Image 1 (cartoon, rainbow, N blue to C red):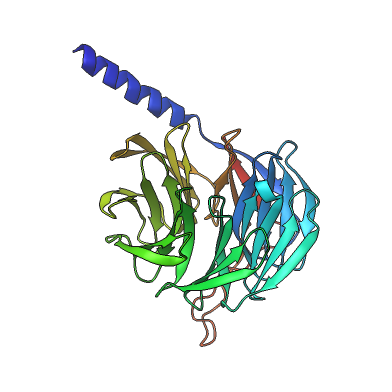
Image 2 (image 1 turned 60 degrees about the horizontal axis):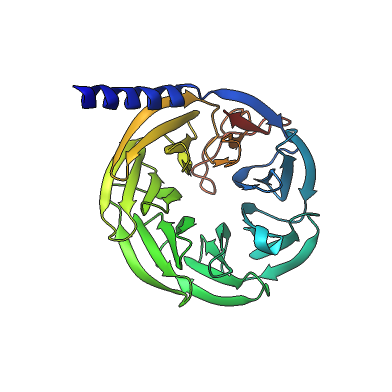
Length: 335
């Protein structure tokens, strides 16, 4: 009986912890184009937000926009290399990587790559390499983060999405159109394993619990797949909201957050490395499909805007998106 009471109290405490989460603020940001990933510079407490052809920089201590990194056409992702004082930005429309000074935001170099439509991007501190995932050429461009030189192109046999590192020499990337995770050796620069993550379909966002070697993939069929990063075995699946494109693992609170484009945030509790439960669904705003979090404060950030009418489908654009209402772009905060 005593053990049961202790267990119930622990579960109740976890429940209360999640229930405190709510949409707390909206940070207005100038500009009317689309968006994708965002990233936090933890030591400086600055947020880098992809936004059309620029990157907006927000001071998280004041929630004010403090800078714009221009000429990042079709920007998708930003990865932070604090040890090198650099940020690497994928310019999807230019087939290039913009490298800027992390403190001043000044351009260091723009590196042209052979990969087509660079999208997700990851800095691996262990190997001091940047992995750029190219959506149209189905490969990864590897850049030496110290010299800014392109080292190699790694074929991935499918459309890559988000990526994560185990910080010990292995890099993982979701392959959206194959329902797989590819494992890349960061030293040899080659794919060493392929994991099938069925029943997950169209995996996009990826997060990693490096302590327990668990990967979290959010998928287009509204489920999250938990995968053993060593064996590749699917551990379990969890229901999430529709339209998720991002996931974040909070190692302190043992919570996993799925940002869902339908306008919700799914909160999942990690009880142990193989046991998980959905705690709650937090209302957000439609379009808030990507996510990051400040590890220092536990605040969650998700970009979105307000939408008007969806245009009629055409042969050139069979799946049109709703029109963004000018002047409404913002970053949501959840605390």
